[in-house]
Image (cartoon, rainbow, N blue to C red):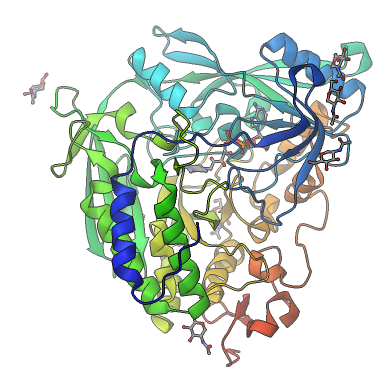
Length: 592
Ligand SMILES: Cc1cc2nc3c(=O)[nH]c(=O)nc-3n(C[C@H](O)[C@H](O)[C@H](O)COP(=O)(O)OP(=O)(O)OC[C@H]3O[C@@H](n4cnc5c(N)ncnc54)[C@H](O)[C@@H]3O)c2cc1C
Ligand SMILES: *[C@@H]1O[C@H](CO)[C@@H](O)[C@H](O)[C@H]1NC(C)=O
Ligand SMILES: *[C@@H]1O[C@H](CO)[C@@H](O)[C@H](O)[C@H]1NC(C)=O
Ligand SMILES: *[C@@H]1O[C@H](CO)[C@@H](O)[C@H](O)[C@H]1NC(C)=O
Ligand SMILES: *[C@@H]1O[C@H](CO)[C@@H](O)[C@H](O)[C@H]1NC(C)=O
Ligand SMILES: *[C@@H]1O[C@H](CO)[C@@H](O)[C@H](O)[C@H]1NC(C)=O
Ligand SMILES: *[C@@H]1O[C@H](CO)[C@@H](O)[C@H](O)[C@H]1NC(C)=O
């Protein structure tokens, strides 16, 4: 629905924010990411395409596979891998939702096979005695949390979004926020994994391995980018279910750089949302409390709720108008409106499951740790949807997500603050997407996991439907991206980001070589690898896609003006704080 906003967008936006917040409880569930031109049951799902939940990979290519298969049991899965290996087909594991941004899920060539975990979604065992739960890899975070809670157990740290699968979380190193316990990543609570990989003719073309604690290869399987084969099942070691108590405190961001260094060790579930152009940060003060503390709070995060498509279209149109008129004041104003609307609605928190009457919100961990009610059926013909559903006109964004060693994070924050000081309105563009989410991560035994105590920064920002269209203040965002990756040696989130963030990534992992050895052993023909995973793993060149306009989409670091949009006034310029950066900027001055 196209809505033209001409005179006064702000009251309209305010109304739409209100509509967003009171949105209904039914929703059209996200689309299946795999489409086969022939999907009748008898026809074996041939001639398929796959995309991610946003409907676009960073380079906007379409991924194809000659067929897709949906095993429902371990036997069927093993048979599928054997058949694919015998035929020497490229294979990739696909999930029900395909939430990763980079094209990890694309098999190369014309004869690819997608193996979906959509129907590998059963809980296999719950052992209250030793506190473990074993699930098939297509089980979602939501199912895992619910299953554990029913048995009085908890996964202490996890992503905040229900829709991720166990296989996908392990595939990309997904995490929540904590410096406590074993660390904030889901894979840090994995005790056992069963992997199905290609085998030799003598093996019947398939090999099933059970990896347990102490087995070095488990450290490869914990974060695998999907290149070791298919993870069939995973055993998690859990904790007794507990209660926690959460408080959001808004402060100015002057001393943020100092505060973040110690904040993470003070509170078990600490995180922060930073709004640099507002000069504010929201501190999440969140800790375990004794289980007899009263409260039955619940978190149903508003941006993860089903939202009226109409409201989403209006908000998107307003963004597009601001972009086309370069309306920085409008961005700042609507960003502030959104921030304050969310804040006064308690972000979707309730003290008792129904109403929000103030902080602290105390309740059982499983009701507070994650949410995502926009995943729910029944189908309402897209009247409502998840805000980023690509079938409607809604959110469309880039995401730049990296973690920085705690030892240097203060300097990074100061650099960002210096950039903002030169251009105070520039980072209003983040406010529309809830600011910079900052979460604590801890070192992991996983070869491709975090190396050091660090802070993970999640920047979400407008992306045009037109890849040749520059965006407001993209020079500032690009400088932050390059500063993080190249100056501060930040580690990328494997399931998010644009190409730039993966440049040189493998050199940052102490055990990167061990990972590659396990990959070579499990899949010597590279059937589960693709050009993209080889590039990310440093085995092949071409990660940076150098072509006209490549800088605009983060496919390259610009080195010539044509990598930006010279006809639209955007040229390749050095950074302002990090002089080695090369960014697409509309500035007339050269900052050397
Ligand atoms: C709304 C939203 C919120 C998010 N919040 C967080 C967050 O709080 N923290 C965080 O860290 N991340 C978060 N993410 C990112 C997320 O962790 C990753 O994108 C994750 O990989 C997606 O999981 P998925 O199940 O959709 O897997 P996919 O994206 O489908 O797959 C990811 C990779 O894993 C492989 N894979 C999947 N299953 C298997 C298997 N069984 N065996 C072998 N390989 C497999 C795939 O082949 C692919 O390479 C969020 C994403 C979204 C969309
Ligand atoms: C789809 O599969 C059916 C059954 O095998 C076949 O008859 C039909 O020709 C196929 N259609 C296309 C478009 O491939
Ligand atoms: C589907 O696959 C089965 C088993 O591989 C095969 O016997 C059958 O002929 C296939 N059907 C089509 C329409 O290709
Ligand atoms: C495969 O599907 C595409 C549409 O996705 C269609 O254009 C093409 O003709 C199909 N090819 C075959 C061989 O069926
Ligand atoms: C909770 O239990 C502890 C000891 O078991 C007791 O000291 C405390 O008073 C109780 N608190 C509440 C709020 O009931
Ligand atoms: C560059 O773009 C920003 C917003 O994107 C705008 O505020 C600024 O005025 C522009 N500068 C020039 C020199 O056009
Ligand atoms: C981050 O920590 C790791 C591990 O200690 C170290 O190897 C690396 O050099 C550090 N990076 C920076 C930029 O400080």
